Image (cartoon, rainbow, N blue to C red; front, top):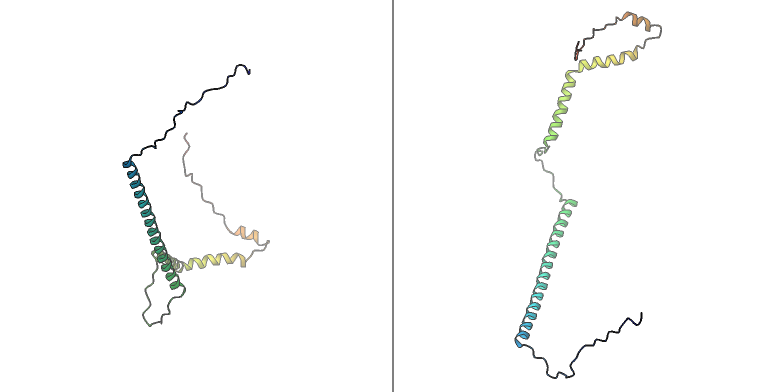
Length: 162
């Protein structure tokens, strides 16, 4: 296998004559490059200055907001003392929902007042079986005395098809 491989013997061709003359640069291109570099530097400095100004404005705004919130918090925590006056009481500031709930309570109380006789009867019926508990010997007589009323059942619904 070693016989089939050949060594790569390609070499780079170089000139044996040394170059002594320095390379000539285009003076217009050199000057243009210097102007572009100067303009880029000035633009970068302007951007840094604008960024610093913007950060200063943001810091002032944050400080102003913090001072406003501090004043508001101070006003809430320590309200100024007011001397009570003999002025008429202020109007109540109830919402519509609160007024409706008050009205419904009043209507409910009025309905209970007008139905109080019926309620007294219901309460009396509830209390009477507890007060007059029948004895086991008297229970069959109580059942025999009361007639059992049954109403005929009416077939309400769909009639069967014949």
